[in-house]
Image (tube, rainbow, N blue to C red; front, side):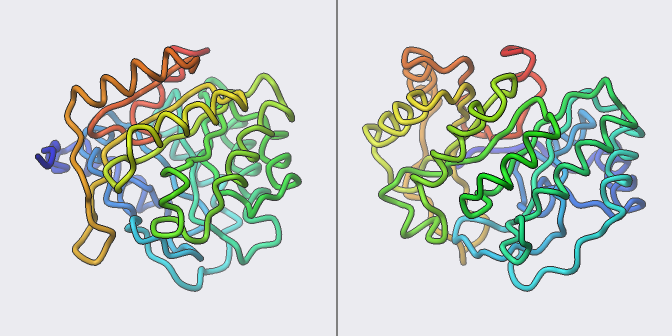
Length: 279
């Protein structure tokens, strides 16, 4: 059964959107049609999407626009930090579209955003949800050296489905990126997540868990894939709450510090609560 979500229409939602538009900012909550937008915006939390709203990749599960991106907005780090201060956030998630057109994949811009938030609201913890940077160690190090509290890079699905769902991604490359987070800075928490309902088996999910635990990944999220439109990859299965509970139980048994598994879970959903549990 397809899950129901909270209506995104509320006064708090309009207030948050007003601040975002004033500062010319984007959120993945809006751009990716996230089902939790009503819940998160009502709590005055948001996952900011930097480096524009146009992705250089076109994954069939994703609702973010793709094509030729606009030039990078050099004022975005200050504007975003100002929004974090105005909204009074204590934990912020920063993600981006893929920018394969940039030499460092946008890593230096991530670093500038982190530094700007530290300057304007130092008490706020920072989580970044990064692309794969095409496997660049140097780009990952630029982000890590800016000292975010959490670095997240989503595996998204099981290896067998990459050709259908994430054809420009590379499972082993993503694993290596996550492994290197702790290698560069052991104080930064490593995090990843997958969607289920794309055609994977339970055995494949558990094998991905093993791969992640073996490289030191600490936080794992699992949520139901919801088809954004009839033009996107179709849902193959709706998992029950009991199945999500089973996945969570197995995750803890395998050794993750924190597992967040549920129908409407997304990697940045209630990220503040997840971070509070592991820090």
